Image 1 (cartoon, rainbow, N blue to C red):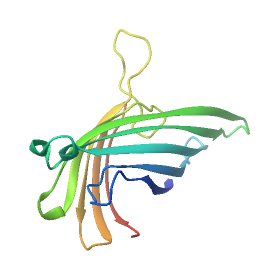
Image 2 (image 1 turned 60 degrees about the vertical axis):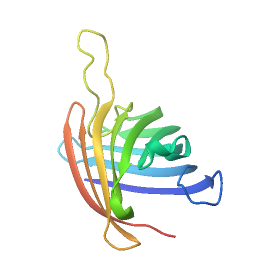
Image 3 (image 1 turned 180 degrees about the vertical axis):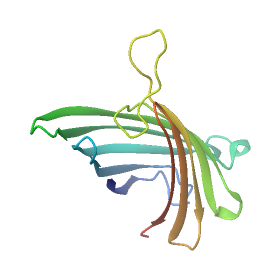
Image 4 (image 1 turned 180 degrees about the horizontal axis):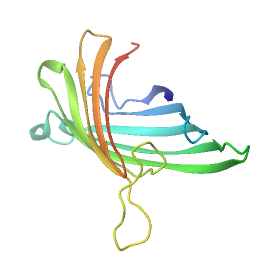
Length: 169
């Protein structure tokens, strides 16, 4: 079982014309319980997400954007024998995407450097270690406040997620 609470606040917007370019600060807590192995992982995160609408650079790039996330987290893992581990997490992600017509949503592809999520990391082949995961997300507005979401992610595991999110304005 997995549960996640994620909140973000816009802390900077370059102007009032509403292009969407800006900087958000995000805090999250994520809990994963593996009943078969009796392992529980709880991760707290604090990160910044910058989004640049490319039309702000050149009108020919209208309808597209790039994002960059950077932050830190703290992860606690409790094992069945009563042992526990505590580790730091480096949050690093970049994405690029396009907006759907009529401001109905967006589609993006991403690389997430983290390897501690359910998707894990892609093996680095002959090199030691792992890369992060790659994937795609889509968001489509159902109403002005309710948004349908879908995501696929490929790492050492493959994940597909469908959801509904309520945005606060």
